[in-house]
Length: 87
Image 1 (cartoon, rainbow, N blue to C red):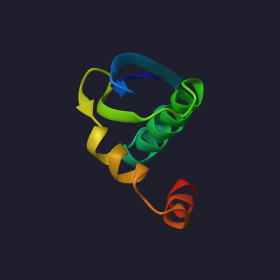
Image 2 (image 1 turned 180 degrees about the vertical axis):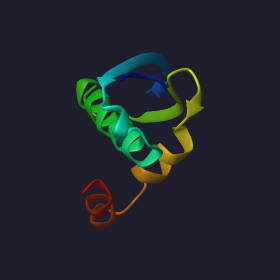
Image 3 (image 1 turned 120 degrees about the horizontal axis):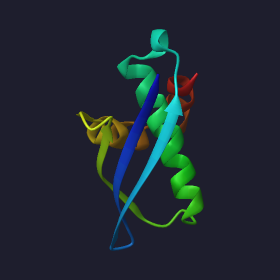
Image 4 (image 1 turned 60 degrees about the horizontal axis):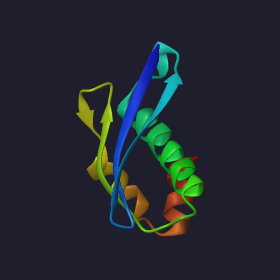
């Protein structure tokens, strides 16, 4: 199954739209797994932009569900909780 995340971000005052496309086995498609994928791609985007100040406006999964709130929550976790979450 092919899924797509559209990332609507504000990077140091400039709005940006980028995306991530993943091939995922259908049996793995659930909100928790998708959120981990979204977070992983978000980290890649931050790395590409030199870890500038980034505000998550929307993260849309296949044009349907917005994962922005959940991604913001994960982003604000202390590092030890984040590491537990990602395993």
